[in-house]
Image 1 (tube, rainbow, N blue to C red):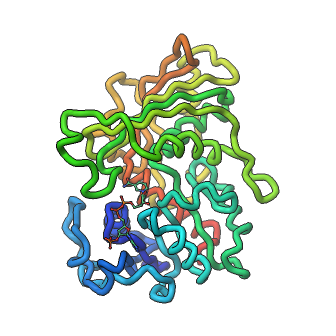
Image 2: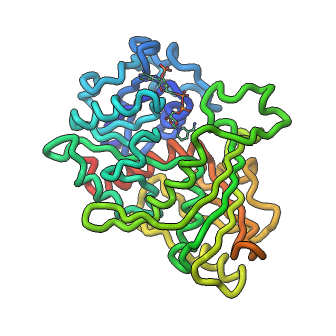
Image 3: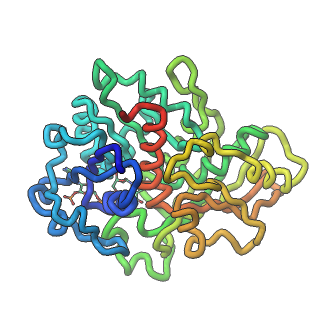
Length: 352
Ligand code: NAP
């Protein structure tokens, strides 16, 4: 039996649809309400949304009437997921938090707010405590938690064991990002087919900054950010799902060889492994020995799209280590990551 009633803001968009798909038969959460813009509000979901998921539109949401994204229309939910366009997320998410409705967001708007947890449950679960420093409501009932950018997630998942074992001096990363990351209809086919687009607006600053907050220490109610430079290049490639990154890292403490680095990744243990969260992958970080892997088409769906895959771990002449990291951008990098955040927030007593 589901215990918590969830709303979805931005329910008609690409991320909103992924939420609907992933929440079908969720053991803890049931979809109570769907919200979108005034263009969609008042219509049955089946009329408002251009359904692009590869399963039939679930009967449970077909006839739900889409609501306006105002808190007064969502008094019957325990919390909301947000897949809102960033041009409207600041005001709408604050409206919900002020009304005492927790918001678990995919949008970038609050990620750098010093009182808002930027959360990957396997990396920085303790940052959840930042919620206690938020001032949306006097009784702490309304708050915002965000998940990171879809490249920052596999990058930080793979850096975490290296950061803990060796310390990080500097990182150079290039992303080869899937088309689905641009929403729907996204990039015109004539631009992307048989091509690589060497720039994604606004992406590189997120890749540079978010890992430093994620790897920071929570002390006295604030995050002391990790300090190392990240040089990022973001490109779009003709892949449907799965962002692949080439990562080069200079470490503070030099390992003896690449095997020691791969071992640090393989032996790393997720701090949430024993919490029994329904969406948590059994192996959040998988290290391939086979040099042909990981590949987006073969491995983006591993562990229901929640695993970060690493491969080609090798030492280098310029940096200490080079490797490939890859994760499903709309599952681990968006809706699935947010659902895992919500599960941790239930376990820690913030959603009740
Ligand atoms: P999208 O397909 O363009 O969907 C945007 C959603 O926002 C739609 O439901 C839209 O409703 C709603 N919306 C737009 N204007 C609104 C308004 N004035 N009031 C209320 N709702 C409004 O975008 P997306 O790709 O799903 O991305 C959603 C968010 O997640 C963005 O902030 C994005 O940066 C972030 N994100 C996306 C990905 C990804 O892989 N796609 C990954 C991580 C994070 P209507 O249909 O009614 O217009």
